[in-house]
Length: 326
Figure 1 (cartoon, rainbow, N blue to C red):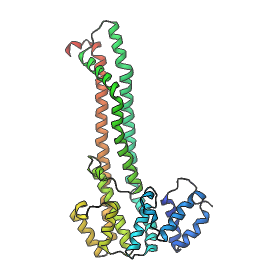
Figure 2 (figure 1 turned 120 degrees about the horizontal axis):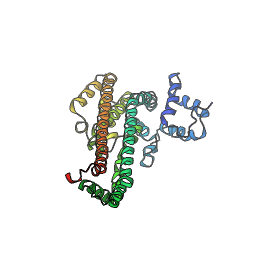
Figure 3 (figure 1 turned 90 degrees about the horizontal axis):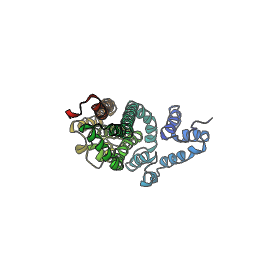
Figure 4 (figure 1 turned 135 degrees about the vertical axis):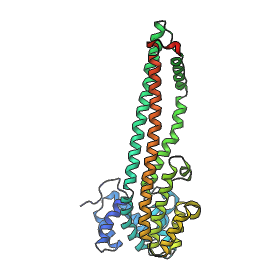
């Protein structure tokens, strides 16, 4: 029996199978020993990395391993070990909690995929319309009216001139789009990996609310895990925040939210407060995605409408003898 057969299997798949075994009463070491013979060869490196985390090896949270799915897990485990918490208990809680985290953000991830679908579709429409206008329509009409000794309207001539200018600078326009595509891919990657987004993305219009909600979620989830692994309330909050940002909680998050969580932690009501905060953040995140999608769709639709409208005006003005009016 092969439990993990895809070469692209990630940490969540391995943890899910381990969680099934832990729920049956096995320790983490026993579950790992039971699963290891059933895993294909390409999954063995993940098993070895998880063993290192279980043994307290801190090498995996060094910078060269930043793209490893065990990078964040190793950093959290190192904090638990350094602060005297239960490493085995932390890993068991991390395994059981990872599935809940994934389910909690499934709607958000679906929203991101939907947004990317809208972006791709509208961008393709804009490119196709603009390309046809640039390559076929206006040059063809320019040649036709020249042969017929007809005078083109000033509006049409202006649009043709603009097209010719674009032909000479299109490479710079393309270069300017590269950062936008990078930001989009970086956003999706951070959400998928549950990694904090770069600070500058938290200040970008349209992305700031998404980035901040994402950051709060990571902070709350990590604080919950650390606290349930034996760390005291304030240490859990601050250590979890250090994984997200160097700023203090008062600087990064609203004071009422921070105070609510501190009260919940110190009164042993963190689980209930986190459930409330998760619900709030899911709603806020979904609303931010919907707002950004609406604004983006409206902006691109307006651009496409302007391009198509300009083409229609430029093409049909001479046919209706309205050139003199412009």
